[in-house]
Length: 304
Figure (cartoon, rainbow, N blue to C red):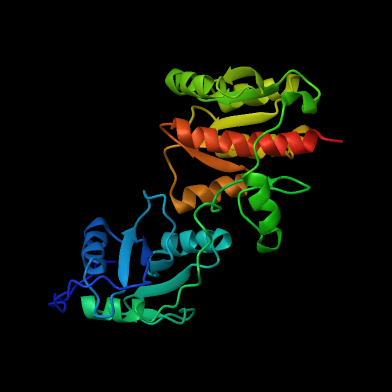
């Protein structure tokens, strides 16, 4: 879709910072690069009521409060559906050349101008988002570690995620066994060094492909698995799917390790059965927080 923007002067900002207003993120789905850049500039304009927007796109990790979707692009509509399956609180605004049979309540049709785009976005009411401290983190429950927090289980999740892991002696063995699956020796070494800082980890093994990981999983039982997304042969998504089909790995924490952390990539990971994501390059602080939560969950499962 090619957007013919009508340039307009936006009201001059009054340089007053509004109170109680947060910046809403707008995910841009299915637009050509040039059009996306124009939309980003539009979203940076000052609003008379103080409302602020921040554009995010495929390469960004931040999830959009509002999904601005090019409905003339079938791939964008599919991506929108995948995102909504994981983030149902996101609000959809459709953009198209002509009429739509299944248009959402908010639809920008035909020629776009900065004023039209902002006028529609200003009408969107966005529900209060999930707290950043909970979004995308493992949740302890009776059955598995899940990426999403069920509102009914939030109190349980919050207490579990803030819990400090207890002594490994409670688990009944010398330490947990971790499998690191990545075709990069540097990433393998980075994760090995990070895992060495966790006293509950008793052994770390490695595989450089999905096929090798599945073979190892047949002959050994691992308590947690770090799984690269992009690998030669079968990728991390397929490897995760195959692991989840094995009875002994139905509940095992599987952490996807990847530089690809767009909403669509995360949804694909969830559909494959991964527990959560760890972004490359691995940062020590992020690893420690994630490690503490996963180990706390493992300890609770080991208790009689």
